[in-house]
Figure 1 (cartoon, one colour):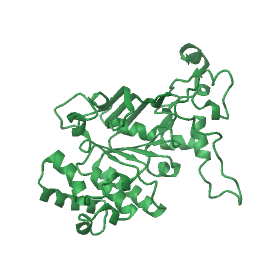
Figure 2: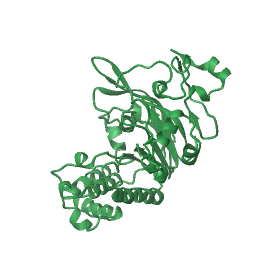
Figure 3: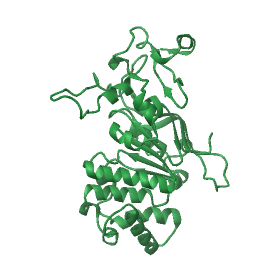
Figure 4: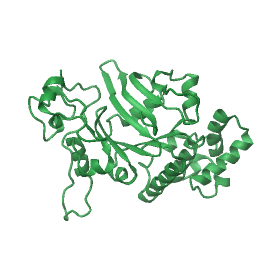
Length: 347
């Protein structure tokens, strides 16, 4: 493992058990987050991106459960510990995982209005993490909260620190969420679609802010989104998820200019083209993400894939291959025929 790796997700599996079916929301995900770099996880709604992000910090609510895999958090360079901690092995409400949340790994949730308490001031909410993890006094926590608000470019931080979330705009609330996440200088920041509900101007400001903070602090960022435009702007690496699995992964430039998986190509083709002819119809991906709990033989994307081969893609599960350095793809059409016959898992 290289020295710059801070978080290594291996074969992560999160299931939701219902009376009718077992929903495999996360089905064998492998991801690596590196110091000072941004890994974007992209895919349609319902592909398991948020469930994967919450699984890292053991924040999956019942009936959801992490049933397999490892989430390895590597110690900082100045730590006496030499072995990584496996977050997936910790109890969801235990002392050990609570010591990690906010201190080593922080998360910006998708909707700040539902994630922030409406009956506590901004300063109290930012200061809570500081007091829990550092043991500083309330006065010191308030002063630190003002510094954090100023750091995320909130105008009038001395006033905002005593305000309530409902008194702030959407962009300001999102900045407060970022300030909370950065309170203890985490080594990994998980951002779950932090710009979805914002206008384009505020979205650009938030993305610039996150990029600056990443460079200045040197933290690794796991950024969840469905917006390929955002991916192009901030990502160093991209992982494309579909139905709980990562179907393609690689450096952002290679993913955009040489996509190997049909789903990745379909996502890129669906991005609006401002140079298109008048009245040109937007490209869409045929079909829709299968309903939760649907069991599909073969490749999970084959019912919607324009390149699917009958008798192959609907019967044989693809394995992860490495077609080029730093590239991974799960597609039977990209596998070597001899290797496919020898190692493919036929259901």
